[in-house]
Length: 295
Image (cartoon, rainbow, N blue to C red):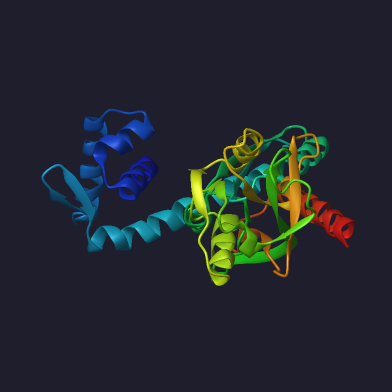
């Protein structure tokens, strides 16, 4: 059994589609099919049920997938540990986030401390983020809402008030605060379901008797400000996303404790490099300062 076979098997198992997996691996489909066939021959059992052109992991495949993921996870941890032991101040920090508004100042401060460490950030839904975390494919997740699991450490680092963003020419722009019920007839722009702030907001509005009407639902929270400025709709945004340079007025929410909890997540078994530990320190210091500012 070869390491390459395991890597190719994981790629196919995760999408259950030979052509798509081959494309992601930048190899030909025939080469991938032959590698998977040799792996099945080595193991003595089929790992997939083949129905026409479709693939489905069978019982053997599902069992082997867990072991293969664990084996590759341990090898990656060994590689990282050796980099630390060699004193190499290079590498890549893998991050997944459901909330990106706080990330720029955190990354800016980290880059000052570790200028040679690169980072790769993915903006994901909570479910997608947790999948990568459980596979050991990311160092940290910055998540709202917090997620608790057997393999995960979850540290709540900030309680972020949610405010309402309206254009400066909006009828509510002369107010400092608003009740949720007074927003019943408004049109909203927001992120899709599955993102923490959206789920918290929808639940809170439903508790007072209405569901927000969305004219825009997207994957990029940073785009909401431009849509609000353009008068497309109003938006619920976390206080950490407030930008005083924008032509937007922000209203506090009355009589309702509408907040999102921001948490730092990491895999309990993942080896943490010195750079990763330093990144965690930067995150904690940043949110400690933010907490002091709103008290």
